[in-house]
Amino acid sequence: MSNRTAFSRLMSLTLIALASPAYAQPTTVGFDQISAGDTAWMLSSTALVLLMTIPGLALFYAGMVRKKNVLATALQSLCICALITVLWVFIGYSLAFTPGTPWIGSLDRLLLDGMVYIKETSQLSVSHIAPTIPESVFVMFQLTFAIITPALITGAFAERMRFGSLMVFMTLWSLLVYVPVAHWVWEPGGWLASLGALDFAGGTVVHINAGAAGLVCAWMLGPRAGYGKDAFLPYNLALTMVGASLLWVGWFGFNAGSAVAADGRAGMAMLVTQVATATAVLVWITVEWMTRSRVTVLGACSGAVAGLVAITPASGFVNVGGALVIGLAAGIACFWGATGLKRLLRADDSLDVFGIHGIGGLVGALLTGVLADKSIGGVSGNLGIQAIGAFGTLIYSAAVSFVILLAIRYTIGLRVSTDEERSGLDLSLHSEQII
Amino acid sequence: MVYDDKFPIAAQLFIRLKRSPGRVIDVTWMLENEMYALEVLRVARAADAESAELANRYEALLRARPGKAAAAPAAQGGAMFARTGAFTAAGTGAQATSEETVAPEVGRHYVGALR
Image (tube, rainbow over all chains, first blue to last red; front, top):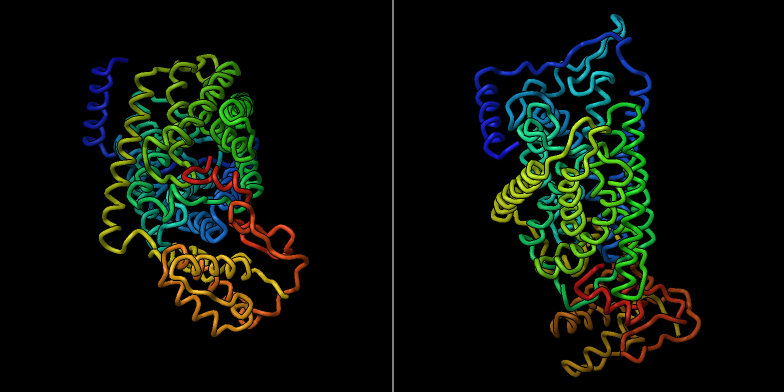
């Protein structure tokens, strides 16, 4: 599809959406229309994806910060989980997963209006996106994605952001960035979905989105005191390894669950996820050994996350060969992202959110356009459209994050005081401490 | 002599204060007497940023375990300084923070970069 055709199609979609308000209520079906197998798998996947944030990401990040900030860092993931859950049922799900316009969904499903489970008549509601599982399961599954995306950003401004400001930022970011981008990509009427952009499990919606926001956060908050001069020793890389392992296992729910069915495509997604991740670990530690004559725990964990991130958009579209290529590219690109590029960008992206999630997401999104196998996903990739989706999301996320952060900076402030930063966030913000 | 986790910080304060404003402090008395310790911390905060950070860490330990300054379990052996001048807790048995226990080459690795 040429760029001109794509633009025309986009404009047509907008006009249609504006002319005819979409019907946003879910379909109600009988219990017998629900697939027990699909439902069982999606329930399991949902739990796996939630496990990625709490405790997976919380441990992964907590192990990498200094001892005085461990509790604050872990707490951020837990509180974001609670915050986004409430936002999601109030308004987030409605705006993300109802037809509305190509840019944003409708407000017809506030407080999950229309979601029913009626035992007496044996009926329940289903989403038009996932007709074989109860809507309650689909809401929960998508919620876990909405939770982990902002939680990923916390790694970029670790050890220096005020807790209240963080909660305000996450509220606004979730509603103004995550929700629209999820709608663009995953709601069939979203403008990127209509263009044919492929993102099976969230390489663009989750990782490019979080990576771009993380980079802007790192710039806006400025470097930590002593950055570049003092050694910022990770508290406990064993925690990081446990966290990375939980992420790895939980990612099967993330990717294979995104098939929204217990079928062969979910099986393929699981297989290519494992293959790409393993490849990226081997590539990362090889590069590390070649450049530094050492293989490190943090390097192996980083390689795993890089591979997981990069295969995410491709997981329902590529075969095993494609997974090997993506794992190879992710290992090299993300190693550079977390080292060479990080130095070029001159931002204290504390835990390399952009270097791994941003770069890994871009690699995955672009390679999906090259490696998508029509026999698996039923569609072929298009590099140009993938680039529009990836860079469009990157620019939107960065721009809106910048505006939100600017507003917070000039109202309640972004950063803790110098004394609070020196004492550590555990003690200064939460009056708790690891002894 | 009784050591606890405040000892390494007090020792670093001893060195820094002796170098910069030229003040000599009594490390042992600092561990035993909280009033004296607080006065040392006041002097440290006025000295320079690094000393102020050490003072903050010391005060955090004071707050965390009030009244236990001299009651920490005795450690075997003495604290020692590595050739680089950085404090190491090897052989002290004291629960030092990660900043103190790290080998110099590991510390260098984490200056300005995590990975």
